[in-house]
Figure 1 (cartoon, protein in one colour):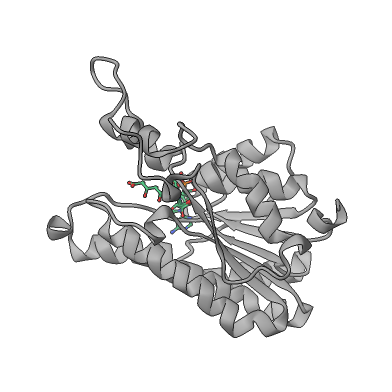
Figure 2 (tube, rainbow, N blue to C red):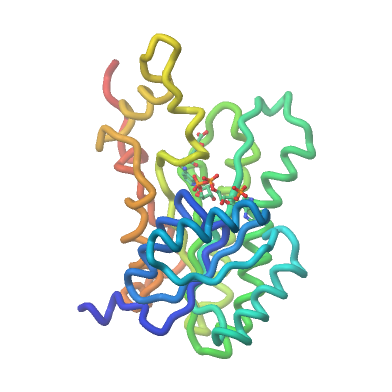
Length: 264
Ligand code: NAP
Ligand code: GCO
C-alpha cells in the first residue's frame, strides 16, 4: 500500500508554492518522496520561499516566473526538463481573488482574476503535457474552489474563473486520458491562509468577524480548514493510488457543500 502512495522519483511543480495552500501541498508531496519545484512572480516571495523550504528541510528548486506569461512558463518547464528530467506532477495552485461588487468591478480587475485563476492553469498544463505524453504518465491537479460550485456576493470574477477551472479539469481529462495523464481538481473549503485573512479579522470589540461566524455555522466540522488538511488529498491525486480517477474535483471542505447550515 505504501508503494501506491509513493512519489519517489517524481518531480512536482507547485505554482505559487511559497506559502499558504501551495506550500502545504508541496510539503506533503515532498513527504511522499517527490522533488519539489515552485515559482513566484516576485523575487521577494522567492526569498521568502527559500526561507520557508529551508526551515522545512526541503531542498526545493524555484523559478521567478509569472504564471500568466506563457513564454516564461515554457522557459521554466524547459529548464525543469533539462535539469530534473521534466514535470511528473503539476499543481496549478497560484491564484488571486478580488472581492468587489460586480457592478462596481473594473473590467481590468475581472480580467486579471480570470487571467491568473483560469488562463494561467491552461498555460501551465499546456507547457507540461507534451513532456508527460513522452513519459507515458502525468498528474495535473487544479486547485479549484467551493466557488467552482457556488456563488456569493463580490466574487464574480473568482467564481467564474474557478467554475471554468472545473471544466478545464474535465476537458484535460477528456483530451489526454488516453496518454495516462490524470487531471483532477481539489476544491478547498474555507481555509485559513493570507487570502482569507480579511474574512477572519477580529472586530474592534474582539468578537469574531461576521463572515468567520457564518463559515463556522456552515461547516459541519465547525472550523476553518488548514492548509495541511489539503496535503493528504494532494498526495492521493498525485500518486498511483488515483490512476483511475480522472476529471474529478475532490472537495476538501469539512462538509460545507453537503450541509444547509446550523440554525442561528
Ligand atoms: P494565497 O495565500 O493568496 O497564495 C497564493 C499564491 O499564488 C501566492 O504565493 C502568490 O504569490 C501566488 N501567485 C499569485 N499570482 C501569481 C502569479 N501571477 N504568478 C505566480 N504566482 C502567483 O492563496 P491560498 O489561500 O494559499 O490559495 C492558493 C490557491 O487555493 C488559490 O488558487 C486559491 O484560489 C485557492 N483556494 C483558496 C482557498 C482558501 O480558503 N484560502 C479556498 C479554495 C481555493 P504572491 O504572494 O507573490 O502574490
Ligand atoms: C471568499 C473566499 C473563498 C475561498 C475559497 C472557498 O471570499 O468567499 O475567499 O472564495 O477563498 O475559494 O472555496
